[in-house]
Image 1 (spheres, rainbow, N blue to C red):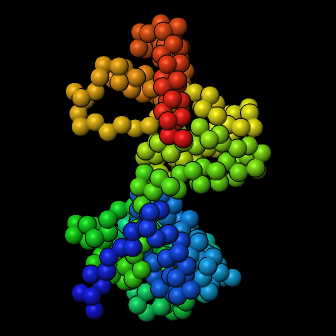
Image 2 (image 1 turned 120 degrees about the vertical axis):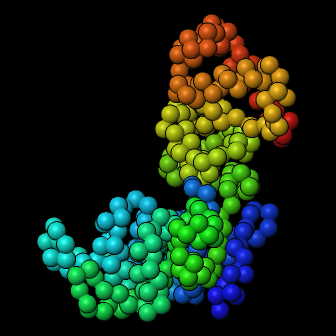
Length: 318
């Protein structure tokens, strides 16, 4: 049985093939355990909540616990709960996340960070569908649908001995992989428009020029970085239509791929240096001028030239 599980391939979806949420629609009505992987900021928790809302358990609790954010000494109590007097400062009974999520769904965020000792207890819950609070022998039934996320390769973690192989197979029933935003460029503009409406309450819009510029960026921080960027633009812009001028000095630049620094021209290296400095010093041109030894007037002129170049590129894309 375990050997068959090993051959399961993650369902990797991008905007040019099958829509990720269409697969989630097929998975949601079942009680199957789902393992969602992907880089930090790709929207793994958003997908988990979508599966929950489309599931037969949507009227029950959705309980999330970040395995990376809670100290190891407290994580077991958070997950399973404890009885009064189970340990120092346990002054009263506490209901754990699994008990809270009974008949509903639990999200184990960043499951790869769970200590091995707790992995064994989680495995038992999955197998036996019951658990005990700390300090008690009473068995509590656990009718819980499990969704787990990880920004690490769990198969590699198994090989390295930091994640239990048997638990991996138990979680890997429906493996989904959320692609990085740079690999699903068609999602950038719809997401940017959505975030603009969300944070401006539909009072502001993003210009076509700015949307095209956002599409050219690599977004190494994925959806989270894009969301933060749009949120910042909504707050700082004084216009109803947010345009390129409103983000002047921010490091949102079309990324070129060079095999080595030696292949860049002197002008390209200079431009990259200036924008890196602007990013480092929060767009403060005065500080950048001082740090790089460029007269303020020269810096303004160069930025004006760069902006004109980028605008011409965007016009050519239309």
